[in-house]
Image (tube, rainbow, N blue to C red; front, side, top):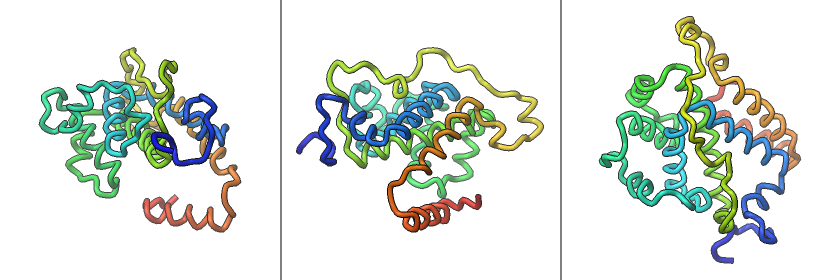
Amino acid sequence: MAGVTWLPVPTDGRAERDTVLGLKAEPYDVTRRVLLAAWNMTEPGLLEICRVRLAQLTGARAELDGADEGLLAALDDWRSSDRFTKRERVVLDYAEQYHYDHHTLSDAQRDALAGELSQREVIDFTWALHMNDAYVRIMSLLDIAPDPPGAPPRIERTPPTRSHKRPFSPVAEREGVRARELRDAAFTAVLNELNPVVVRQDLIDPATSEAIRLRNASYQGCVY
């Protein structure tokens, strides 16, 4: 049926993302809380322009719905648009390359990000970007339709209006603590909920699941 997800799932008037992703209610609930926590550990304005740009790159209709038309036009040509600051261009450049292939992030891109954000902020921003990239990919892959007209804003997809307070200790950064200790504690707590929830899902047979896990780990270069 044109204009809706290709999955044969009746929505009964509900938002399509709630119907489809809600087929696995526990992972969906924790994912929404992870996305909400992501806003609280990085600068909402920076994360928002990256979120919208990722939605553009993937054609995620539900994520593009309601976006400012001027912002969308500027993001189409953000490298030459005068709408964005140097800081915003740096994070957009990093976010785009991360989306396409994080293996090919250049030293120049990493250095540029480190020049705009502290060590703690780089880690938190990268995690927030990672979770939003994963979510946007799912919304695009399943071709989820926008929420019904008049639906209330989704707090996990709406940047907060408050200013971001830097939740890091310069002393800890100077002492060179491990990356996982620098990551925002509230975000880490809910992320640690998500991982076991995902693993517990009985979706495919164990052999196929393990083959996928190992192939993904090999491609990502994850020695862990």
